[in-house]
Length: 205
Image (tube, rainbow, N blue to C red):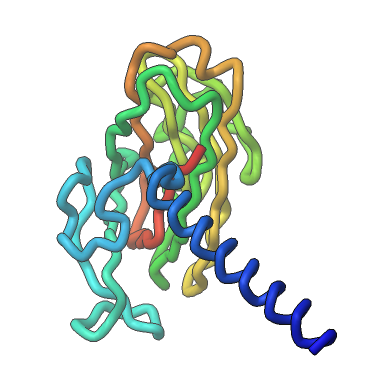
């Protein structure tokens, strides 16, 4: 009996702790994902720009049995974007944006230097930059987040035929400059050939 009593009390306390956690999660839910329709079950509802609904097979080809994705076909002369406006207003003070990216086997960036902004031609994959809108970068893929004049850029390098996860952490002082506005997050591709596919986009504080 002396050994059973502490075990019973521990079990009782654990059950009550689990119940309190569930109640707390119901009363004070975790902050929701800022993006909508991130699994693309509703096709591309809520997304704007140059994207198309598609299904991507494990071998990199499109097919009805593949996972739902957004396809961004490259243009020979212009960069392209898929974007969504976030209802953020005064918060948060920072954001982490994450997305999985896949390049088609025929993916190629344009080799024409005039296709890119001269001031940003040497920006490097993996880096973060604070810049104005309208930047066309000589990299495989980039995340863009901002509003008004100020935008954060996270640059990525994509190997055709392989899923790559790109993560951008956008912090102060950017958010101080536009605290009364919603933000827009965009997934961008350079001029060129082929296509980029994205899945599992997320934006959390």
